[in-house]
Image 1 (cartoon, rainbow, N blue to C red):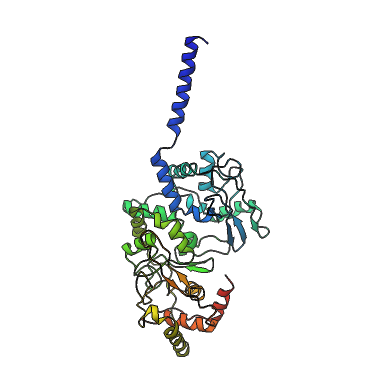
Image 2 (cartoon, rainbow, N blue to C red):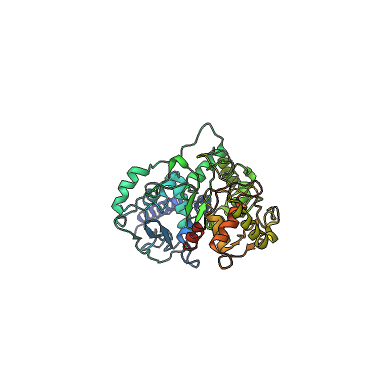
Length: 404
C-alpha cells in the first residue's frame, strides 16, 4: 500500500471513530436517563426476577386478563438491543412497537407520550448500559376479542392523544417540572384516576382515586377529607422520598413505588411534584356521610380497644413516622374503604428507605376477626376523632378476602 493510500485510510478511520464518539451519549445524558427511568418506576413492572432487573416477564393483571412486561435490556433478540432511536421513541410516544403492533395501555404510553424526545433518548441511553439478558416475554393472556391488538386502533382513536407536554406559561418552572413528572414519566394517574369500562382515564375525575390491585389509590387533589388538603408540600415530598410522614405511611402498591421510584427522586424533583399536587383543585365533591349506626360504632369501639389501642392510642394519635395517626387521616377517609380493609386483613409493614430506615409493623387480623368485626372497627376509626366516611359493609370485607 502506498503512503498516500495509507494516509487516506487512517484519516477515514479517524473520522469514523470520531463520529462514533460524538454520537455516544455523555455520562450526563445517561445519568439523566437513569433518573427518568427511576421516576417512571420502570424496574417495578419490568422485573420478574430480582436477579435479572429490567428483563421483563412480570405478569400484570387487568380486568381484561393478563399481560407480561417486555424485556428492556439491550439483548438483540429478546430485548431492545436492535431497536433504533426512532423505534424506542415511537413505542413511548405512540404506543407502537417496531413491528407495527399496538401496545395495550397497561404500558402507560398515554402518559409517556408527554416526554420530550431528548428525555426518551436519555432513557434509552441508560437502558443501553444494562447487562443484556436473554429472556423472551410470554404472550398476553387476554379475553377474546381483546387478544387481537388491532382493536387498540379503536381504543386509541377514542381515548389516546399523543403529544409532548407543553409548559403552562402562567405557572412557575417548579410547577411545570412537577406537572411534567406527574403527568408524564410518573404516570400517577394510571393508579389514582378512575377508569371507564374500557380501562381509560375518566378525564373529568383526574386524580380522584381508583381501585388498583385490591387496594384503593387515594385522591391526589385538594379534597378536604380524603385528598391532600391537609398535607403540606413539605409533607408530600417527605412521603415520596421516605415512604412516610406525619400523616401517613405508604402501603400496598404504593410501597413498591416508593422503594423503586420516588425514594430515588432528587430533592428538587420531589418538591416540584409536591408543588404541582398542592395546586390541584378539589375535583368531584366528597360523598355526604350518613352517621353509622350506634350499634356498629359501639362494636367497633370495643374491637379497637382490644386490638388497636396499644399502638394507635385511645385518641388515635399513634406515633407519627412509626404508627400513623388516625384523626384527619386522608387515606382512612377515602370514599372506598378497600385499603383500610386490606391493612386490617393482611397487616402492614412500613417500607424502609435510606431516609427512613427504621421499621414498623401491624399484625394481620384476617384469622382473628370476622368480616362483620372488621367492617365495624373500620367504620369506627373512619368516623371517630372528627373523621367522616361511609360505613363499611361486611360484604365489602368478604369481597376483599377473595382478592388476595
